[in-house]
Length: 114
Length: 114
Image 1 (spheres, each protein chain N blue to C red):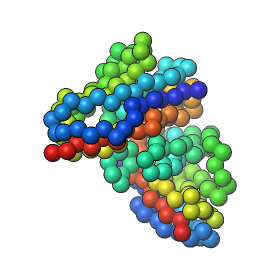
Image 2: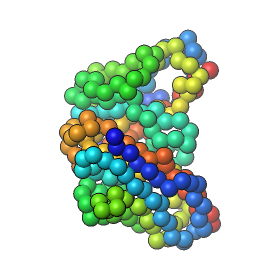
Image 3: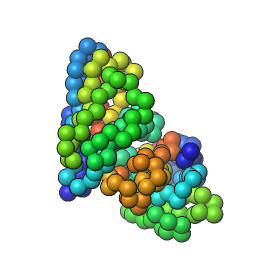
Image 4: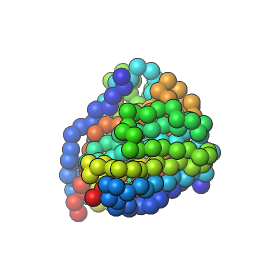
């Protein structure tokens, strides 16, 4: 079955540091890939997505590129802020073959210190 | 309108109570989902409705009873819950059968069973 593996956290960075959160996946079909962010006490918000190989998703300074050859979708940001502190989930879905299921990684908790 | 609205935001219930969680979206999505999320864990899929019909039940105990009265509403009826059912319950919606589409999540209902 489909699976997503994220780098283990927690990750603690100083403000303006570079962020990378690794994500690799296993899928039988041709999934779409997503990064969701969850702030404390809230639901999940879509951060960015990519729907096919070599697509780059970007939003709010975050970027991730769909790499089919390495089955990866690593999240990066050049300069993090305190407000980026949250839990980040990598996810995949193939709604055509998987009847609407999304598969999530375990999440990575990011704390940014001033 | 790109919101999924869940009510109530917080719920405390006894093990003999009956309560319901409600979810509403007006994006024209015909797939709706219930997820359960424990602290520091990814969301776990419970149910999927497609065109108002239950399409996936992930072996959820019968004390959880979903209902989709129309294309905009999704309910989760709760009865005789256990303390281990305490969690954040997330509703989500998406388009049906389209690969390149993300799920939109509500803010969740934080349920405490006492």
